[in-house]
Length: 439
Image 1: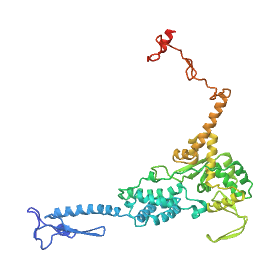
Image 2 (image 1 turned 180 degrees about the horizontal axis):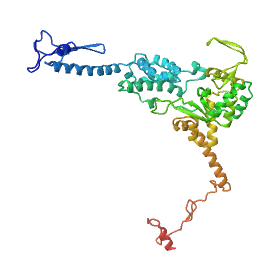
Image 3 (image 1 turned 90 degrees about the vertical axis):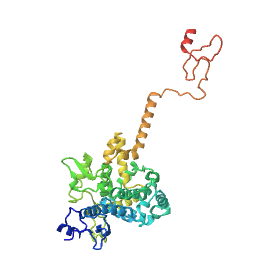
Image 4 (image 1 turned 60 degrees about the vertical axis):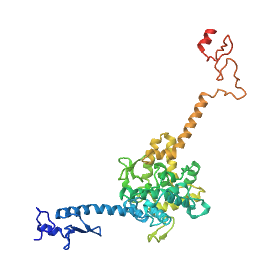
């Protein structure tokens, strides 16, 4: 057996022959007796000298190389990650599981055309993000100049928030280095909260409409404050015994991976409304009555006039526009029904914490953001009522009625003892005790 390259007290075994085919070897023409390595890691070949003259040293060198190279390769791949790769990883890991996945994909499509699919994530800085935000602010709503430019909220949702999601996910999950990560707060556009609600006059107009089947669902949204998608409940979500309706919250709580549920108490009016829907469909609670017979090409099914069918998101959205058009109601969104319910709840209770739980908000700051102005109005009304009760008979002095400052009279109206030293005025500070003694 050739013991070339072994230490004086080391003997070569059969296992050493096996190791020689696993990444390290001693060249036949070696002069210095140093082992070399030849390994393939992550489909990439690495060759070189181990710097070791023993099997044990070469084996340890290769094991360390195999343990370290994948990490180095992962870091290199992370540094080369492009925008389109980051978007794909985000959608696979998180985005596709959300209810708004379709809308998110459409926004990513427009954003990718402006950022560039091959742009590296670590190259997205404040300058690039600022340019994309400026371009988005020049877009028209629904691509129609008649509707004006997109709002600041839409700019945030379609640009800044999406870029932040991709970069943050890539940095946390895939360790992508972001030395020039943008300042997200600096690029956030100002958002004006929408304050449109359903007035009593508009509600009376809706109730006069011929589509009574839709009015039942509108009543349900006004009573529960649910979003449209959450309001399309099934019978297995209704528990008359416990007196609650179980709905899944749209957003998860912070630092929570599991979606939470919201329990809607069934009030007497809600119970009567739900009881009226029994027997119309075995699965869906709310249905609508077909106004005419027609064939739906998208689903390849036929609807018969007079029969009832489950109410859908698209179907109610279309019917809502027709309903508002028939009643001459302008600029009233479906989500405004939720805002109306919250406003009425806050007016009735004055407790914004209850309203936050009523809306299913995970953070009360979200509720304060959109409804704090109502509390300000209530405080103002209370202050006016206090003034009328306690200051109704008090006449406020006008500018002509105010007395001019005189000797011995304070500008606030309180009498001050007049003190005149014997030697006239002096720089000695005024001392009430001295004045009293002198008097």
